[in-house]
Image (tube, rainbow, N blue to C red; front, side, top):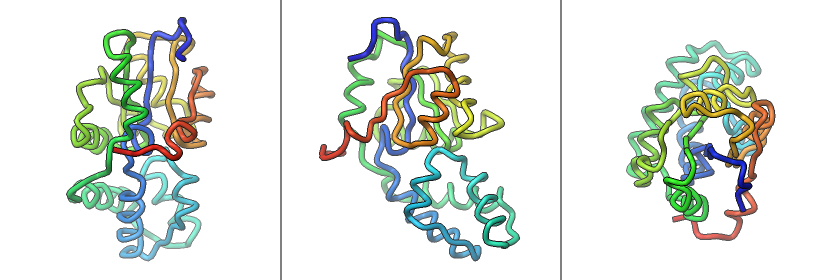
Amino acid sequence: MIPDDVDTLIFDCDGTLVDTMPVHFEVWTEVLNENGLALSEERFYELAGVSTRAIVALLAKEQGVTVDAEAVSRAKDRRFLERDSQGAPIDVVIAIARREQGRRRMAVASGNVTDVVRRTLRGAGIESLFEAVVGADQVSRSKPAPDVFLRAAELLGRTSSGCLVYEDGDLGIEAARAAGMRWVDVRPLIAGTHRG
């Protein structure tokens, strides 16, 4: 149940609204291998919410490989969008957004770039549910910094205290906390449910 004093819902996209994570991991593996970098599946999930460019820069530094982080991140995003499907809708979370449409203000705030987020939402048929979409390209710091959530609240003319964030990643939850917002970890909600 959503508390009565919550007037704004902010949803992460990948792994929260749309089950894109397996596709993202496949694409990450391909593009990083082509650039002499590696990312384990466990680490991939640990970094959920961090911008693509920041992940590339982090991996390159850790692995002692010189790459153009911006070019690699663009290649990764391009390859992801070339896929026939970016992932199935996560119905149990989307049902919350559908139920609350018109009752509360709603936005999406993601560690991905805005174009990728919008196309993912469009592919799932849910872009029109949200008044604002904030991607990592609209802020200076990615999750676990609170910037994407604070920007979403700002675009909707809301304060942090009235916002409830839906997230599937530990870094995203940390970002919601840092923004002074309440949060819901959707992982228990979607465990064992049909995703799409």
